Structures are given as structure tokens and as C-alpha cells.
Image 1 (tube, rainbow, N blue to C red):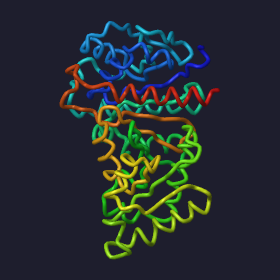
Image 2 (cartoon, rainbow, N blue to C red):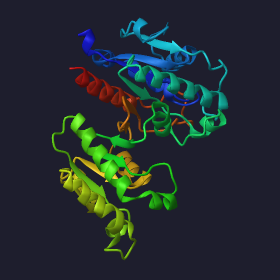
Image 3 (cartoon, one colour):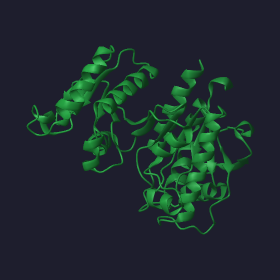
Image 4 (cartoon, rainbow, N blue to C red):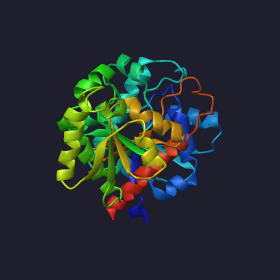
Length: 334
């Protein structure tokens, strides 16, 4: 049984946010330990504070490496970097928290690249704090890509009712239009197909959303759909991929969710995918970075500075991210 429980690295995220609390809440659930061996990369003192705030009786146990954890329910194993001062306030942007969050990520990625952990699960970071801490990245996805040496990657959001994968993410709408090229769209379609096959979908049905209203209306509302997206879909079909599109963005999610015509939707920009995912399941949606040499999942919400430190943050997305990572990692070991 022990060989079937993969070790998961869980990064604490921004210490001023809700990350420590949702980690403690999630790992207070015995079910988490039935499916994996969770190891927190963070600050043990902050995790203890979070346990006190949420009134969890768990014991915080410092460990030296992934192999030395006890991985028993009732104890939270922490690879302790001891880099958060005891008085760091919740709910405020702080360069120290931003710097520390990057350190946890860097260490977890290194362990994943060395196969010491089977996957990485991330609590939320604050981008402004990250920048103030000396690291100018748009978000988690770009950090993972750079530190793992990955060029072909994408963000996938997954919920019970819908999966989406993005062609562009943290850029302006003006820049997104320039980034939507046949090559880039085809690359994301192929990543979608490959990822869903890894998740057990034998022949994924992929919808490719249009970029403009009515998918451009044959060029009347923009040229991206007919000049870049449609040729990418045809190229994917020629490779044997079950891709459809460009599908008008105002109907594609209805067809995917209500009619169940598609297993995943390739979306063109950040909010085109995030809005339907968060509408359908804000509390239990997760973020998956696909294309990496290891699995990375994350909660699909931010640091929640407005409620951080109050013990009320919802841990369902963190549980879902752990469960997804554990399920995929365990399947890969068989």
C-alpha cells in the first residue's frame, strides 16, 4: 500500500494569505493520507499558527527531506525553511512573504525534477508581493516553466463539469490577439489531447473556442478566427485529433457542459476560460500546468487577503488539487 501512496510537495504560498490555513484544513482530513503522503514546503511556525487559528489539533513535524516524513494523519510534515518572521501580518502585501513563496516553489520543483516527489500542489501566491520580493514573474505557471526548462506548456483549469485549457493567460487583451497564431493554437490543442489521454480519456473531444464575437463571422468581426484558429483546427484534425472549431464563444460552454459534446475547451484568453470555471465551481475548481516533466496542480483562487488569518478560508479547492494530483500520480506508478 505504501508504494501506491505518492509523495506530494505542497507549497505554502504567500504566508500573508490563506495558504497556510487551507493547507492545515485539507490535511486535517484523514482521506488525504489514504491517497498520498503530503509534505508541506514552507515555514513550520506559520503552519503552526494556522493550525491554532483554525483550531486543528494536528502536530507540526519538521522533516529534513521527503524520505524522512512520517506521513500519518494527525501530523503535518513540513520541510521547514524558517523564513517567515513571527509577526508577519496577514492580509498585507509583504516582500518577505513574496520572496519566501518563491523559495518554496524553487525547492519543490527541484525535488520534483529529481523524482523525490511525484507532484507539486501549490497554495496561492500574491504577484505583487512576489515582484517586491525580487521575482518578476506573471504567476505560478511561468515560474514552473522556467525552473523546469519547459517551453511547451499551458494552463488547464479543471472542475467537475468543465475543463478548459488556455492559449494565452496573463497578458492584455491587445497582446492576446497578437499571440493567437496557428502554431500556438495547434500546440495547445495537442497538449489538450495528450493531457486528457493521460487522464484516461481514450479519444478526447476538443472544442476550440473562437476569439471574436460569433467566431469572427467570416472575418466581419476580426480575422483571427479564420486566419489562425480555423487552420490550427484543420491541422489538428489531420493529425487524428478530434478537434472542432472555431466554436462561437457564447455557445461553446453550453455545448460542453449542458450537451456534453466536448471533454475540454481550448480557450483563447484568461477570462474566457476562468469565468465559466469559477461560475460552475468556484470552491472546488483546480489549476493544472500541463506540459511539465512532472504534475503540478493548484487551487483556483487567490490569496484571499480580505479573510486571511480569520480561519474561515474554504479548503475545498486545495483538497481537490491534492486529490487530482494523488490520483494521477498513483496511476502513473502502476
